[in-house]
Image (cartoon, rainbow, N blue to C red):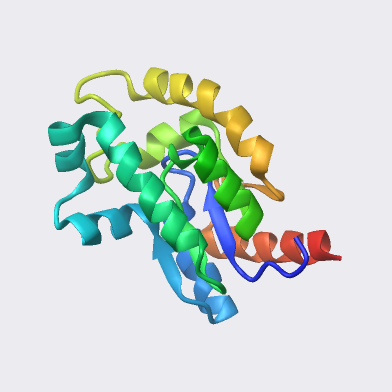
Length: 175
């Protein structure tokens, strides 16, 4: 982790990556980026539209390109999409180019947080969100853990407190 000037946040949807990322960027006086927002900026359409027209495979290709470009930047805070860890090249770029923080949260907390949120293409309307989130977590959790330098729980915690713990954990990990 020594010499890495960027902080990359990974974790499931609803773990607080964007909110915590913005707080960290303010505290560290670094620019903040969100890979999903970058994809939308580049394409001019929202993520659900990309999923509808290109499927998950098309979205993952666009995500791979965004992650490659964003992780090449120095001195940023980046919030990634929940599935960014699915592609090996994304995991490789994230692990090699910055300090990776896994924001861990329970499926119950995720379901509560995404219930009123923006449209999420991997959560079908009317379906049991907790079941689907559990399925996604089963696949993704080992991948998050594989590249994480630091793991911080966000369950029932305020953004400010999570960001403060992330900073303490990063300082300790850097020695």
